Amino acid sequence: MALNDYQGEYVTGGTFLYEGTLPMRITIIAKDHDACYALGEAENRLEPGETPRPLGPDGLLYYQKGELTPHQTLAEVKAWIDAKAYGPVKWDPQPETSARKTTGSKGPWGQMP
Picture (cartoon, rainbow, N blue to C red):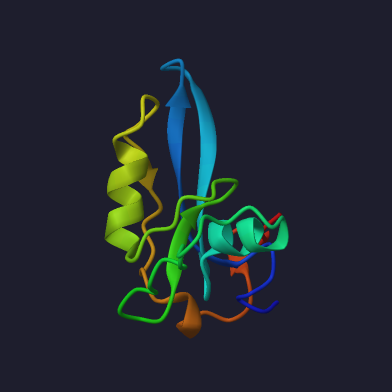
């Protein structure tokens, strides 16, 4: 899977407790472009002078899967997720590497949806 497609590349995941009791999975993906800008461009709804968010230091933007808010680093997206009402998230105990260093989009549970 290419980084510029809709799915992005799996980076890491974690678990939070929905309503304090039900474990729910959360996933972080990486893309090599600003997906929100690309969507606005495709739908011809960009503001005059609007530009894509600059890529992070590793040439990627990080997203909570299912969200369009781009973050330049993995630490930034994790902090954003942990600050949400359902946070904090218990992140998976795995090495956190750039999506460019992973192989495909498989996480510890196989192919990610």
